[in-house]
Amino acid sequence: QVQLVESGGGLVQPGGSLRLSCAASGSIFSIYAVGWYRQAPGKQRELVATISSLGTTNYADFLKGRFTISRDNAQSTVYLQMNSLKPEDTAVYYCAARRPPSSTYNYWGQGTQVTVSS
Image (cartoon, rainbow, N blue to C red; front, side, top):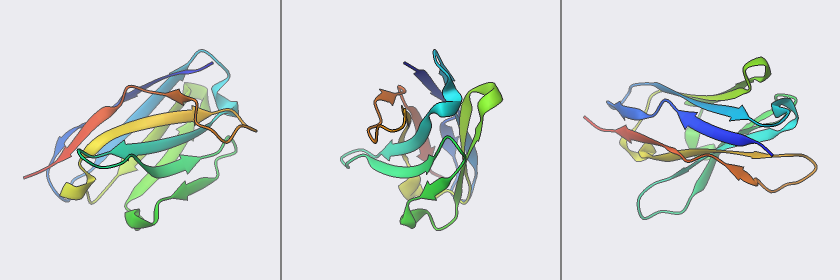
């Protein structure tokens, strides 16, 4: 099993940047694939970005290159760099992990709030 803790959320003005961190513990983190999800009030949770154990990344189409996911296996941490933030990016951001070959994200953090507002 793996435990996940997100950090780095906060209040930022439109056009600003934040970097979220997802720190893992409890298992061999490097073998896990990790995804960032978000959920805005009144909306369904949506996938933002994923990174495989080998570092292959995928992003939601709506991001249009504004976010970057990366991982540091030595630190057991996955990051989400968010640039050019918009008010519609306001949400609780969660990281999740799955252990291949499973396709299900079984492990979730508690979430971190990101608010984009002037």
